[in-house]
Length: 351
Image (cartoon, rainbow, N blue to C red; front, side, top):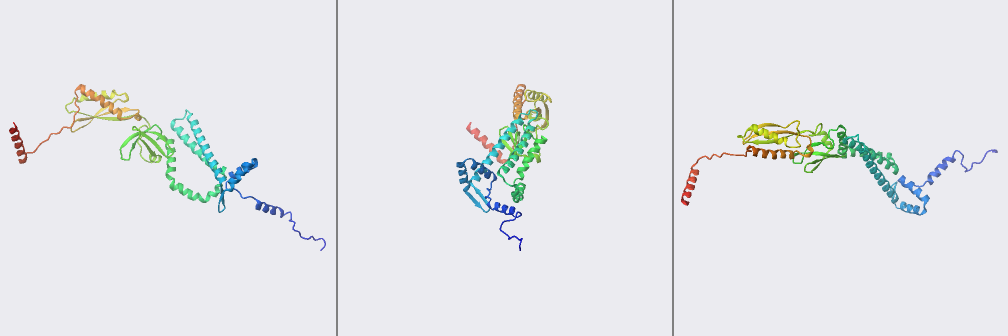
């Protein structure tokens, strides 16, 4: 019919954009698995042909696993990014610690708490920065989120528990660096030590013999702790002393008080006191009660100084320090009588 046009292969204006989009999609190059590596490769190849050829060579050495393609260049880029992010986070955490320690208005506990919070924030930011630089889509990890949550819930439960417990201990100041607490070894023997450091996992406690105990933070929060310097560093200590039943008790008590007052570390107020504790088998037992305010410097050395001084005071004033004495009573028997007669006969014969 006249006026009709014959259909041709020329696409209509409405179909042209669709066909162009399909043609572009088919011609698009395969994307590298690491977005950062793709960007670096394009930037380097456009500026230097030699370096670009090296990059192409490294990128050609690849291993394909299904839809995943990992080349040697991708591995190098990922390694550099990870190491760079770790070094950057380490530098920032060190810088943050130095800045916090310059604030003189914060005490040692507040400084330590601030350092820990800043460290957590810095490392969390470094993690997300590394994810962004590598171009990893977090939605792709949604499949593994359930397994990761179970791993945290079971495998890392104690780790996260100790981390939170350490922060809580620093916030309420129940345990802080410099405190003196009582600790027990594996044999159950109790001693005391000074807290040197509250770490992410454990508290470091150093005893007088330089043994260092690492106690999990969670144990100190949920168990009973004997803190000698929680509200006050004043500690009362006892020095047991025994004197003879024949000694003048009034003189002995005065000498005990004099020995306690002679020690420089013993406080004048409250003053030392002497209590009679019991009538023992061989002695009258007393206890010298005295106060010190520096338990981190040791308790046994104070007790030793008092007893040494008291030794010489007792010697000078004739106060006897008793030792165990026993009276033996032997029951008579025929065999014992014959033995005594034989011994007497033998003695006479020798004479």
